[in-house]
Image 1 (cartoon, rainbow, N blue to C red):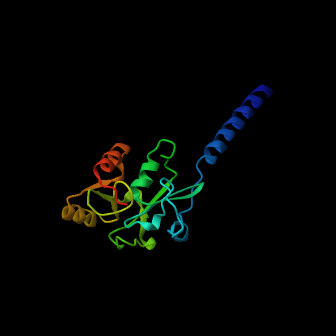
Image 2 (tube, rainbow, N blue to C red):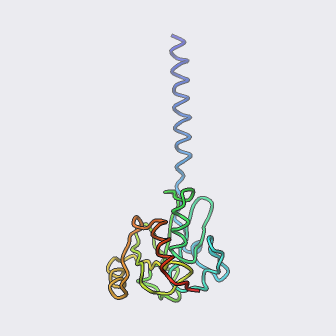
Image 3 (cartoon, rainbow, N blue to C red):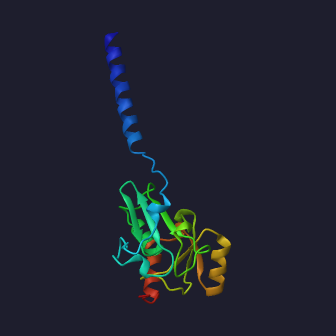
Amino acid sequence: MNRVYVKTGRWLAGVLVCLALVACGKTELPPASKATLAFHPSDECHVCGMVITDFPGPKGAAVAAGGVKKFCSPAEMLGWWLQPENHRADVQLYVHDMGRSHWNTPDDEHLIDARSAYFVLGSGLTGAMGVVLASFSDAQAAEKLARDTGGRVLRLEDIDQKLLGQATAMSPMSH
């Protein structure tokens, strides 16, 4: 009878250790504060090192347990995030809502979750280096820009490294 208790005790201890390890891997990040996400004149793009506020158009920010990484454009942020080592569900992605912001000076009060955003590719608008993705919280605002400029509306799941590379090769340098 004593062996049964020992085996059961070891089994339960093993289950508890496994549960503890699983729980450790699922740390919830608190929502990022507006102050943490705000873009300042001294902020440099995590990818290209350019001063972020030197360019018009929406910016991007990625928040993870290690802190905030800021980007001069949604395309730079998504290019970074789509790399296998960065493509994690625990990374929160933010972009400016250009339906509520002026193109030349995006308002940090209007940052939205990139996972729910509508992106317009091929609008001809000037932004940071590479492809310009105009980001919107409202599908109708994105569709209007696409209709008016000949662009097309995409969702986050439509964007991959190949698309960003093709669009960059086809777009003129903005700076």
